Image 1 (cartoon, one colour):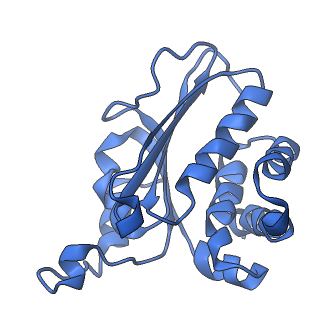
Image 2 (cartoon, rainbow, N blue to C red):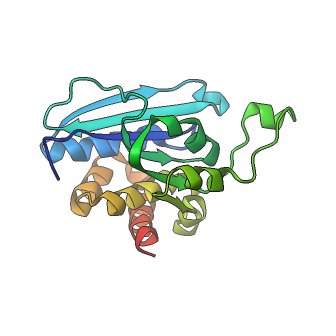
Length: 196
């Protein structure tokens, strides 16, 4: 991995999906690898299902935690609409990883608008390097639907060739003991999901 280059990972989802835990694990790994790391988190209306955004930047020297529009190398989206909402932050040639999950925002729940059926296809038309995975079902098969974030972390790890051992160490360090085994299993399932 090139230390001179700053890598920008934008992690987006809604409240309760584990975006903040995911950014903590990723930042921990980057620190262990000797990178300078900056993290920014925007919670919004997280408790009410609103957007939650984490920005993780790592490299030889990182001066700001904020990812500007058009600068994200990777957009890791825990939900389809959130992927579309933050797509303009992706740089040309960037990569999108999307959990194929639909969580209706308030305007959809109130009946004011319809959730777009073709949202993934529209994203794929704009970003050729788009990977859509079913992290939610994979996490459920591992024993806990809440581990979908760690499934996505496994997919990200395989996609950008992060050191698997360092990720596992960070998961052991950060995830509470009662949820550790499920999360380790979810991480391995995410690695396999990418190569499937």
